[in-house]
Image 1 (spheres, one colour):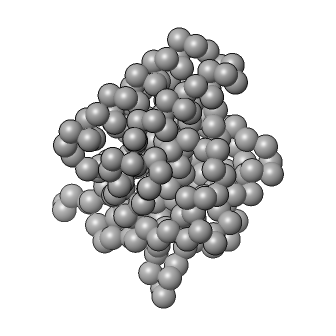
Image 2: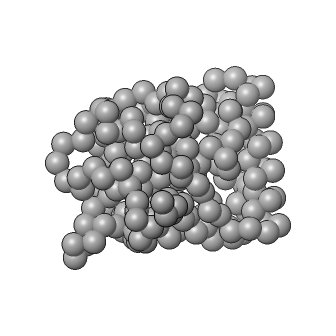
Image 3: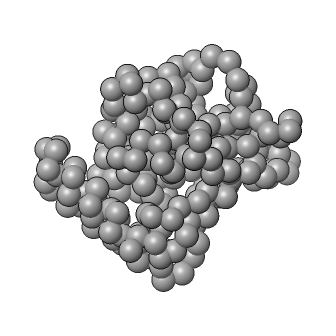
Length: 203
């Protein structure tokens, strides 16, 4: 059986990743590319949809500006998971669909961006938002418990980021930020310090 290409293709601008971010897209279950399109008029952080009959993932880097970069990567990956898993681009989004797409995104990102347990926890906390914020996120509103995702999900997503010294430096920086957050705790000041530390990793 031909191996399916399910890689999540996220092209990040270096070295100012946090300030100048673009998502190249992802692939569908047949290995065909699904374009990522920046759209600052989009009212959501990211949304799977159709353009001229073809699946695309639109994203707005300005929506909910308080979100961590890692959270934005997760939300984009969630939408990639929706199209890979064959969920409709339009219509009601069910809690089960959201759970499966969350787990697809987690599996795609856990070997890199979400490798550190503290960063994973920070992303889950980042998406513990008010109902008014969920209007700009892939619903329905829910509490993320990504560690409970199955060990062998439907897809074997993988994250593809630029290789080289800049990538290695960013990974090390993010790991250090996560370790500081774990030691500090859940206070608002701890999260603020983590956000500042994480943003500086792209500079």
